[in-house]
Image 1 (cartoon, rainbow, N blue to C red):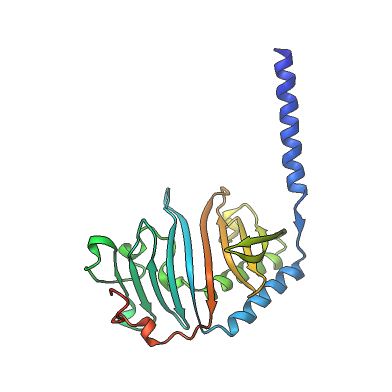
Image 2: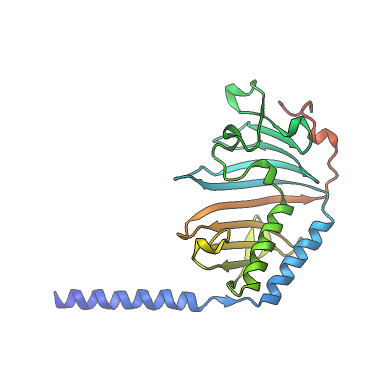
Amino acid sequence: MKKIALLGSALFLVLAFSMSASAADKVVMPDSQLSQLLADAQKTLSTLKDYTCIFHKQEWVGKKLMPAETMTVKFRAPRSVYMKWIKDPHEGRETLYIEGKNDNEVRAHEGGFLKGIKLNLDPTGSTAMAGNRHPVTEFGMDLLVAKINGLLKKAMKDKELQVYDLGKEKVFGRDTIKVEGVLPKDKAKGYYCYRAIINFDTGINLPIRVQIFDWDDKLVEDYGFDQLKLNPGLTDVDFDSDNKDYAL
């Protein structure tokens, strides 16, 4: 029994040392470097009129982790968003939202045998929000960067942010800098989350993957922008519900 206890203690010490070493191995990123990454992203956004991508999304909604979703996206400023789901569980679903058009409602249909039923939905209503943490009105690289920018700058100003450089990482075949931002583990502080991991694409200076963790350090939002094409020259046809390539 004494040997087992000693072995258990030794194992605990090894694990504790490994965990401490892992935390100690994190490289602190200077505020100036983070500020530059955010400034570079804002600069790219200032020239961005439209884009297309394959959007990956997985969220924790209520008490349930929703299935991962994959969709093609067309986006045009100020806020026109076309989406088509290309994998299960919602393969074939399409949505179209154009700010100021269609009474600011989402034109949508499900896939499969429900494809023929076209709906106009309140983007913040219960039907459109089912299985989602955010409405389509909040979709967009501009709003994402603005949220990250506001969150991190406020925390830097209040000296409540720890930032770590997690090194270089390939994401969707692109070179990125992986950054972790850690905030006070106190929801009452008013921050959006406890922790965020962001991959900044070094070629286009935009975040192409964002992971958000709640105050229990649970991953609640995971978003990825794959095959991102900037300023492809989208036209009104790309946001027309009568487009012959759509079923809207």
